[in-house]
Length: 228
Image (cartoon, rainbow, N blue to C red; front, side, top):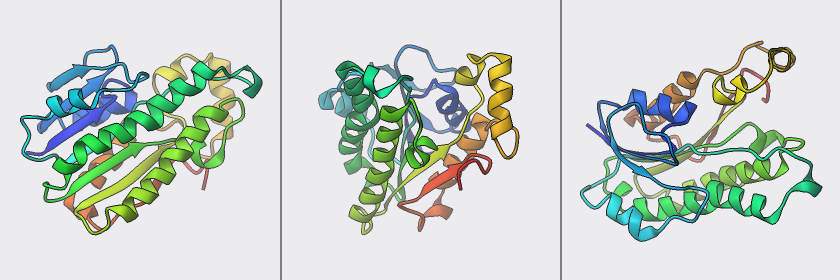
């Protein structure tokens, strides 16, 4: 049984990841929604800076941690001239500041694992860029660079650092689109289909396995050929 920390455990991807690890010892974190699967759960507003002391208390009963899986994210949609300081600060805090704080809090425990894993759910936009989502895309790009940098920094430890960059994932965000908008979007996708959350979760499950011990510093595309 592994010790897994899932941050953003109730979103479409986070929930799919939680389902795969429900037989392990899971600590889950979400903003408002209660997880569907059993875990030691904490509610945290991840758009505000988390308290390191709270993070240490959350994990005080663990002797080691096998994986930190960081999945939260949301996009502010709009032209760059309409983006406010609050919008930028919120996106930065959620995507970068709190990610770094969780890494700082968990790294000592990850180093005590036989094979520690840090996995960040990024986005296709972190590599391709996105019109009207420039701040979101920039933060996802920053996550990718953090992953590559930490992989080098931690190369001599047993901790690997990787990111998964999904394309359009079926779920809450696509369900908010009209049928017409969904059809227009599907026409742009080479495989003419959205990514299923379970596909992303299965990739994360593999990265968490011992078989991936030499894989680090990678950003895994899972977008049906939309960005290659």
